[in-house]
Length: 250
Image (cartoon, rainbow, N blue to C red; front, side, top):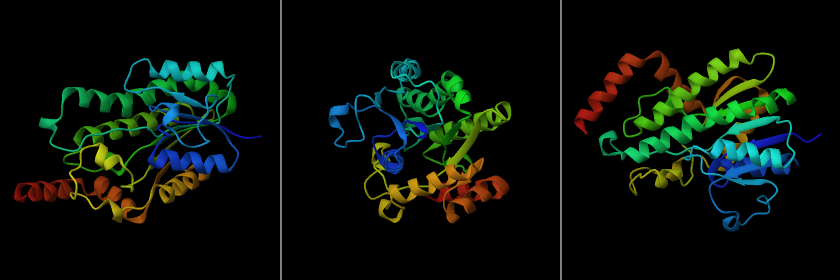
């Protein structure tokens, strides 16, 4: 029987690549995004399977839950929290509205949506996956609020994994920088980052799917990213000092 999968942030980047992979497996997909369905040029996105909701709005989790109910979805094998947003630049320059949106989309919405959909996940003995970031374990100047939301999200996942042991699996997957349009959307100045040196979304999505299939509780994608996470966790004092010195020289 096909697995029922709810994927947030499915209209672009890693999310779209994930949707294409699972569609190729003939899974039952419920795709979420902010964009009108008329803008989506793929057969993946249908009125029956595409839920448009802005996770920056407090009403969004209820809208997603209602969408599932109206379509008779009474069990959920996999819930993948992929949607995310961010801001590049000094925290002092970040607008209050941008801070609230980043916290809302990256942290509050995944928590609330998981809470609402736990009965469906329990019914299937399903799994919830939080797409985090190596920023959760590293000091990230110019990405401070984004990094904070990812660190908090991992804290929630860690506790939830213990609470739901034997009922619902909980996974965290940390991709590193990926060749998507998110860098421009967050305000990275042109030429500041060489996006072409990052792996493409399709490759990263394939690694994420393999990580999910393996059911490992925590996975970091890519050897270089694994080393960065290890340094962020085990060498925090010297790493923070080195980055502060680098920042002063810049």
